Image 1: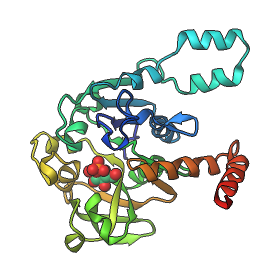
Image 2: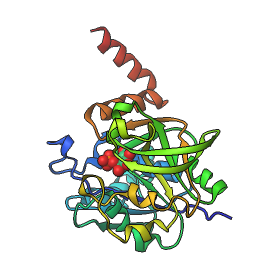
Image 3: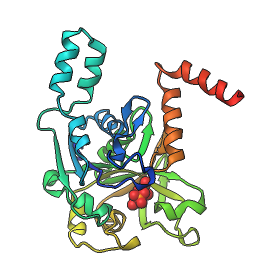
Image 4: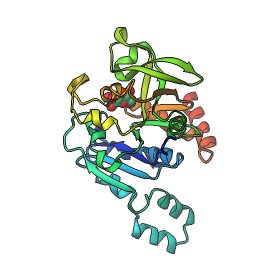
Amino acid sequence: MAQRVRKAVLPVAGLGTRFLPATKAMPKEMLTIVDRPLIQYAIEECRAAGIEEFVFVTGRNKHALEDHFDHAYELDTTLERRGKKKELAQSEDATLGAGNAVFTRQQRPLGLGHAVWCARHWIGAEPFAVLLPDELTLNSPSCIAQLAEAHGRTGGSVLAVMDVPREQTGSYGIAAVRNERGNLSEIVGMVEKPKPAEAPSTLALIGRYVLLPEVFEHLDRHETGAGGEIQLTDAMARMIGRSPFHALRFAGQRYDCGSRIGFLEANVAVALHRPDTRTEARAVLDRLLKG
Ligand code: G1P
């Protein structure tokens, strides 16, 4: 029987240069979507899948992430004293359980594969999730919950994929698949950021993974691939044929918050999605578009 997915790795060492100057003194993962930082959406996505243990792979200047998920003693005590129940709940919601999060540094920017490898001792010998917080997904069940469920059925690794226009394959890991049944198919190949003419398909990896721990054996080799970096995609490609490996067409929306327009789109989409902001957000957009 497949082991339950209990832990998630969050690679958050990136410099966020596309968002300068906002990211000069603040991690890009702390940029706000409506009223919570981007990173919190990834945590909520995991919690919705029953995942409560987190490994953050950070870098320099990422202290704000650690503080955000800590118990804010002074704030919470003040809110309690003032009877601000809703605000207190919001603060507590952003607090991770004692001992449930570790923060380790990537130290050198050697690629996504290297970032995930840095989490190896905290993951050990069990299946685990990886979420790239730049990507925001919306749906219930959450994207990671959909992958964890598919892992439960297949016992292997499962990646979330989505069709992208062929001219965009150079921005993604691309999977070649066969035997598509429903939304699940077997992965037969994977390549990182292929040119459109060389891409084996248009099925892009969208930064959500459930992986067997064997991936660390391949990451141990520290082989470099596309862009001279240690690529997670290359290590995963080596697992094909050795253990079950599937692609799941994710049901839901996904926003690329790594680009300015994608980030703006995510803000608007979340505001329109949430019951507490929906009506006002729609009125504001109507007004702006008419103007
Ligand atoms: C990373 C992965 C790539 C994946 C993408 C999704 O690339 O290497 O396989 O498709 O995330 O966002 P990055 O965007 O960090 O260059």
